Amino acid sequence: MAVSSLVDSRDVRFTLFEMLEVEKLNRFEAFKDFDRSVYEDTLKLAEKIAFEQFHPSNVDGDRIGLKFDAAKNEVKVPESFHKAFNAYLEAGFHVLQFPQEMGGMGIPNAVATAAAEYFNAGNTALTMYCGSITGAIQIIQTFGSEEVKNMFIPKMMEGKWGGTMCLTEPSAGSDLGALKSKAVRQPDGTFLITGQKIFISNGEQDMTENIIHPVLARIEGDPEGTKGISIFIVPKFLVNPDGTLGARNDMVCAGIEHKMGLKGNATSTLSFGENGKCVGYLLGKEREGMKVMFMLMNAARIHTGLQAEAVSSAAYMHAVDYAKDRIQGTHITQSMNKAAPRVAIIEHPDVKRMLLYMKSTIEGMRMLCLFLSYHEDVEHASTSENEKKESTGIVEILTPIVKAGISDAGWLVTAEAMQVFGGYGYCQEYPVEQYARDVKVFSIYEGTNAIQSMDLLMRKMLMNPEMYNYKMLRKHMAEAVAKARGVVDEKYITPVEKGMEKLDEIINMMAGQLMGGQILELAANATPLQQAMFILTLAWLHLWSLTITLPKSKALLGDAKGEDLKKLLQTNPEAAYYSGRVLSSQFYIGAEFPKFFGRIDCIVNNEASVATVEPENFT
Ligand SMILES: Cc1cc2nc3c(=O)[nH]c(=O)nc-3n(C[C@H](O)[C@H](O)[C@H](O)COP(=O)(O)OP(=O)(O)OC[C@H]3O[C@@H](n4cnc5c(N)ncnc54)[C@H](O)[C@@H]3O)c2cc1C
Image 1 (cartoon, rainbow, N blue to C red):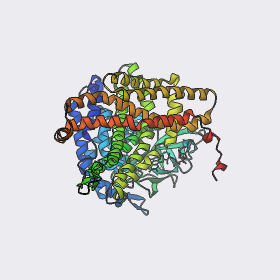
Image 2: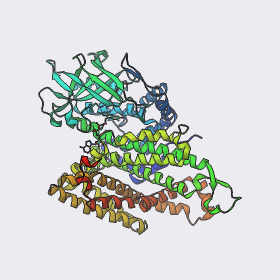
Image 3: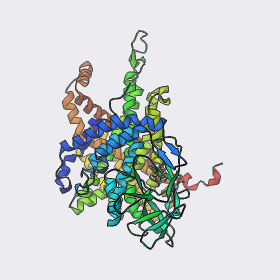
Image 4: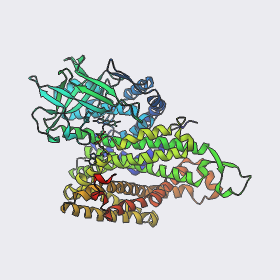
């Protein structure tokens, strides 16, 4: 049994072209040359490379894994990674969004994000090596001096040099201000870097001839905490004036982690300046390292949400395929009939429930990722200050929801996919157990989900002037409710509307707590709030999509019922898609959304145990 696809391409098209109408981005100068056919070609090529090359290599990353050579401090990735990596680079996916003047293709972020879903569903560990090149180029291009840009960007644009992001240290995980890496100024303007970074994704590999590390460190004499942090570009190999590779820099990969999942990606310990000769180039201004790194981190947080969505999608597609194939039991309506034929498990209501839960959550996560990416495009390309500001507000508030909400949901969705497989799901014969192991880390890295929840509540909402970001999100939600009236059954509109009102109330209450200095209560409720907002966000997007899918579904199905309906669904893929999408949205609002009120009640009840409990109580 082999799936024919890891991503529902019809749903990708629906979200991009019917909901977001991304073709209309060509109203902006930056995207004026693009039309639907360019986007289709991009998506088709992404799907082809991802399915034919990334997907088969995924199991190699898990089973063959990485080989660390301690004598040479080198990491070898599985052979199949090289071919897939090269196909990705040759097709130019690492420079898809960069402007054409830079040698990129200038494709809107929304389309690039949709393309990235295919690669992450195929092999997310490998996609990380690819994406790290894009991220490093982005910060060097934005903050680098001409010298630094010329030294690194051309080879990275060619895909010949890889990238990383080096923040974490043994004593500086969530608390980056505690980092100890040091930078000492040299007369020629460069810096000598010493320190150790741990858990660095893509930290060592044999797919590119050089690796460019953006490294957070403190210049000698600079203040403690995040305000004293600067950022440096530290190449694995130094670069000669003519752009060729020079001597080995004084930095090594001291080892790689042995992890539960994501085994194809080298989570490395990097040691800088053991011989006092590790050269680094300042990026941006001194002590502004966090500002520069935030550009990379924000993009990486959105990408982490997308990773979780894509891996969930791959798990779901396998689960659907298995459920259609696995014969077990009789139809529930025939349970008293001893002669009844055995049916595929997809006929059982509980299996349908599991699949609908997965389908509706994944479609919601996809809408969320693409909606956010679309607003990044508007933020970047619009000439209207007002429009830009509104989109910035949306990007700001949705980034922690994408990162935390989707990564937590991804863990649940992949677990449900295992459940569909029964005992086989727990065994290596099928890929779903790998997906579940791979997906877990997304709630941990790029800032744990606790850190995201605090960011959402405090920085993105309560401390955001006049709660502008929240108002922008609410505005979009209110528009969807207004549009749904008269099209969608009130039974799906009313709960979402009530949820929005409830959220307003809670946020006002929390703003009062901030004024009253009840910081403990706020911190204790940050995660429940984030979880509630994730569920409401998905319900809102499902409501919006219903206003489009319902009329189309009705038109395609007509009055068909019973056997006629079944035949129609079997012969008309569009009818099957739209009616399935309607049921999925209705399921999300009707059966999943009530969880929102549970999360909100947890805040309203003002249950004081979290704020009161002491370490000693955990006996
Ligand atoms: C596979 C993998 C890849 C990674 N890739 C990279 C990379 O490329 N670059 C990089 O720099 N780092 C990377 N990391 C590191 C990752 O970002 C950190 O693990 C993460 O930030 C958490 O830090 P920590 O592990 O030290 O946990 P800790 O900070 O010790 O946190 C432990 C627990 O305490 C909670 N906690 C801590 N502080 C607070 C607080 N103030 N409020 C509430 N709760 C809190 C956390 O939420 C968590 O649940 C990677 C990690 C892994 C596992």
